[in-house]
Image (cartoon, rainbow, N blue to C red; front, top):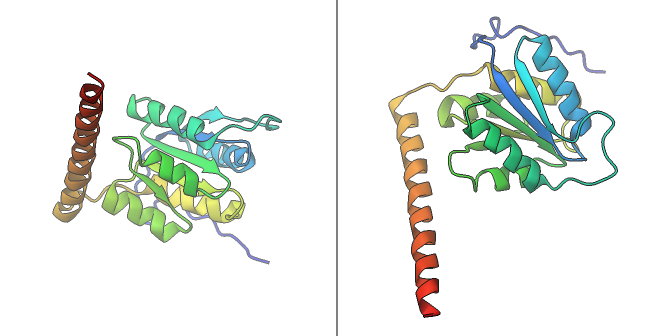
Length: 185
C-alpha cells in the first residue's frame, strides 16, 4: 500500500498564487476530473468545470469537442490554465496542440508536469483516466498548477519558435485554400 504525503506548494518551492483553472472531461474522464476539481478548490484555486459532470452521461462526448470548449475558455482569458481528462490523455493533447495559442502537455508524472510549465509554458494539461491512478493524477496537477514559466532566454526562444511555426503553417493553409479556390475558376 502506498501512503501519499501531501506537501504544500511552499514546501516544494513552487508558486502558491491561486489560479483560475478550466477543467473538462469526456465521458471516460469525468470521475477523475471531479476529484481534481474538488482538490483544486480545496487548495483555493478557482476551478470551473466543462463537459461531462458528476454521475456522468450515457451519451459519449467527443474529446475534440471538450478540448475545443476548454481551449476557448483558456484563450478568452477566463482561465489561467486548463486541464482535460480523457481515456489516455493522448487524443486530448493531439487535438489541443492543433489550436493556435494552446501549448498542451500530456504528462504522466510530476517531473514532466513541472518541466512543461517551467520550460514550455504549457497552458493545458492532458491526462488519461485509464492510465493514471487518482493520487498520481493529483500529484501531477498539483505540481503543474504550482509551477511557473521560468522566463529563461532559451525557453522564451522556444515559445517564439512555436509561435512562428503556428503562423507559418496557418499562412500555408490560407495560401492553399486560396489556390484551391482559384483552381475552380
